[in-house]
Length: 283
Ligand code: FES
Image (tube, rainbow, N blue to C red; front, side):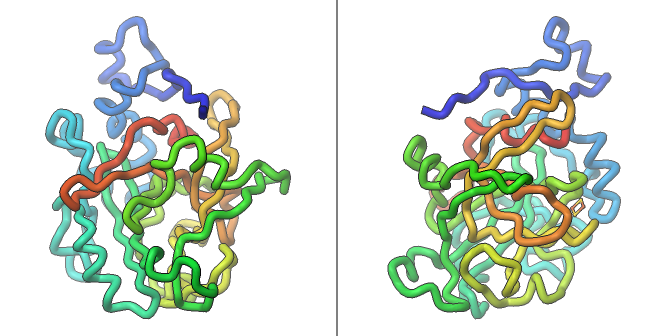
């Protein structure tokens, strides 16, 4: 079984520290769910000026206690993003399927907010093409080997799926934590139009083809169809941890972005909270 720490370090905002007497700097998973968006506020405010993301911070629990559904986030892009009219509405698979049908690649993506933290959800017609040759523009999820920043082999995505099958994309959907591993900007979907965000797909997690998740700050690219195991580092205490995520395709980011496993609940996309310790690298 995967070893998952029950406690992990997060910087608690001063305004909340008094409510967590005796637990300074160490909060458990349940507390993360309550305070997650607040703990991120400082960095969000610094890195999200472009998007104004900090201004959307939702009430604890995303508005309803125990509400783990994912909401669309299109603040400032209501007139340009395909999901602009759905800003802060609950994400459903049907939304993505309808949008993907308009593309060459059968993929669609959207920025979102889950429990107050930024996320990106991608839909890929993966099950339609499984078992067929990996031709360009026949996009599907590909499980791959992972190599850390130094090039050292870490492991295979399949190894993590074997330990917890919930990690595998659910119903052709995948969700990643939306904080860049370079300097923690928030790579929304798709904030810019360039060769990395074109409506094209090439297999193998390379930097070819478009449909990349693009970080607008320093141009890091992530292939949300290339799934790997990798390692990352908590910036505060230096500890390293393995995670399942999507591959970095190019740019200065050291590694890819971690998954937040999801389930569908009556077609509504909901995040699973078991792996929130993978999200701590920007703390
Ligand atoms: S913060 Fe994303 S590329 Fe620098």
